[in-house]
Length: 427
Image 1 (cartoon, rainbow, N blue to C red):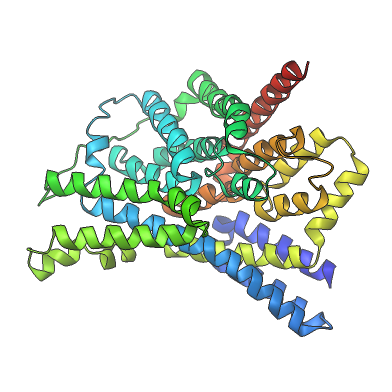
Image 2 (image 1 turned 30 degrees about the horizontal axis):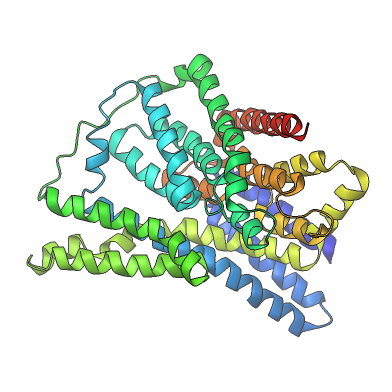
């Protein structure tokens, strides 16, 4: 049974990777893979109730991510419908593609630490669409934004799901995380940007910038109101989580509701047809539903592997065969580019207890770095990557050819800096 399910997962993974040559949408492949993994598991299981219970447990965890993604995408679309992003894009006047890339990446880096890497990547791609007309050039920007969002989310305990998991599990603390991982995070983004600027800027041949926003009925007051409301709502999500200890998606749904109300109120005097243009219903129709379903399918498949103990078994084999915890952390980071980092980090937290590795020990700090940035190496390795993949239609092979090596170099550069700083401080 285990071999069959792993085979299904591998075949599904290749179907996703070779989406364009096969001419089969990655979402369809992911959904089929996820369902088949659980179907085979159920057929061969001796205790069906355990399987259904585990499926329900994983679906609850997956739903948190999907509802978070749905809420963030809708808020961003509501801001965009009201031309809120013009207050940012109108102030970015450069027509130099490399300069623009640096500006967008560092904005995304900072934003990810505040509102998390997933929401930040969605916001940055929306901004990018208002600045760059050429779809092929936007793919390059999008690939680098993935690296920026994952690097920025790393050094904040609320910036990515893995650091949040480690924080809630009392493996790391907020202040120490910022102090120890901020510089490695900067290096993780800085090195790919420097390499790109020195050697690869030729990719930006014949780039087309947008000529400016000419949208009718542009009201600066409404646009600024929605920009401030939307960003405040996104920033409120981690505050709500801290105050209530409820999962992040609950705060995101509350934020969506508040932004929705403001959107309705500022357009209440318009006629019905024009109000519909700025409505949340219109925003919902514009979000990328296939990418949400892709998430569902791939996380269902990973959930099946996790329930069967396959991921935990692989982690235990690493511990037995390697033994060096720095190398294990690096391996987990590389594995998170292929298999979702959430179950990998969960398995690691189960393998090593607080008695052996107390809070803020080197083990947990380095796991936070590796799991947080390793997902940038492949486009399906992180929530930010999947979101950008759906929004800009970036295929797996394109990303692997053009961005993966940059992400890999940044990954090892940041890791080397962390280990060097730790070694200096330890002595």
